[in-house]
Length: 145
Image (cartoon, rainbow, N blue to C red; front, side):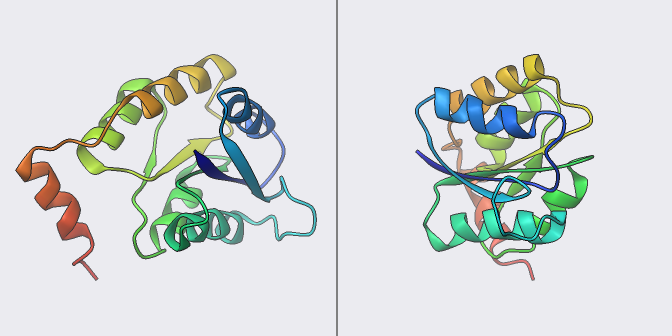
């Protein structure tokens, strides 16, 4: 899978996210502080990763900032993006299942490497729900605005 990853600084699990995704066999494109010559600020970095998903050059993205909140807000401003701030595996699984989230937002401050592994396991193991009510909710997201 092609995954865009952004971070506004190289602290916490920023580099570990890239390494963990590559170890899992994913093709990773980096943005923000992880890339040479790109603007590092969370709004710009997260937008770049989210646009990669929206434009089809990435299947999913992982966006990171100190709290994860700004990264998720910025990503969600891009049409077609459903970013979820996840601090644990259960939230990550639910975001994929019920919300068909295509961008995982992480806190560089709160996420340990052990939590990162659990979150990624849950994120990639979960599949979007085929329940009609869940599908209707996800479809409605594209109508809001």
